[in-house]
Each structure stands twice: as structure tokens, then as C-alpha cells.
Length: 165
Image (cartoon, rainbow, N blue to C red):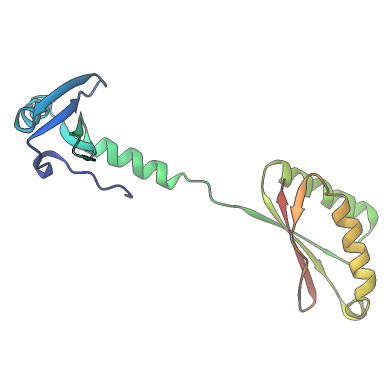
């Protein structure tokens, strides 16, 4: 849990501003009295805003277990970046390339990052100028839909990351 809350007897202030469990403001109240109210409701007194610049601490009566559960659930459901990979060779047919481009466009529309990998085989490694021309033609088809970084050459692979615009 990112935020550490003081609860019940950990709150050392003499007076606090109390917020009830339904959200209504009770006002300035003695901490011992607030603890008694929380105990009567079978709930916890939780410090939601510590005192700043000599202002009173704001505490709320709530179920601390539920608060921790909701925060953990929210933390676990944070969006994780998904990278989809599409591989093809230099001598791919136009139809196959078109089908792969449609899939890539769908990924970009769903806001996925796409790893575009061109694999070179045999003598294709020597034709680097033709490969660069083909890559530029391919990247122009994604203009407006995606941004991309400079192609990375790793051995026999040329890798381009397409980031949704």
C-alpha cells in the first residue's frame, strides 16, 4: 500500500475534524470522543489528511480493512503496457503484407504499442539500401496513426516500435 494511514490509537492529536462514514462533517471534536463514536459503529477512526500549517487533522470514520482492500485492488488493476509483435521477411508478398498491416492498424487503434520486426535471410543482409527503402515505404502507410522511433538493427533483424498517436 502506497499511503500509510494512522488509525485509531495511532492518532495523537487532541482535537480533530471528524467526517462521519456517510460523508457528513461532524466538526471539531476531541479525539477520545471520536474513537468512542467509531467504536460504537464498529468501525475505525482513520487519519485522511494530516495537520498542515497548524490546521486540524482531518479524520474519517470508516472500515480500514475495506479501505486497504480497495487500494490494493486499484493498484493491481493499473494498466500494464502491452507490446504486440509483428514479424515478416523482406520478400513477403504484397497480399500478406496488406493483411499484417490491417492487424497492426487494429492494434494501434486499440492503443497497443507494436514491435515491427523485419527479418533478413541470406543475401538480403547485403541489400541494406533496398531494405531501408522498403521500410520507409512501409512506415509511410502508418503516418498519422502512429509515431515511430529510428529503426534498430540487431544482427539479421531490423526492429521498429510503432507507438499509437
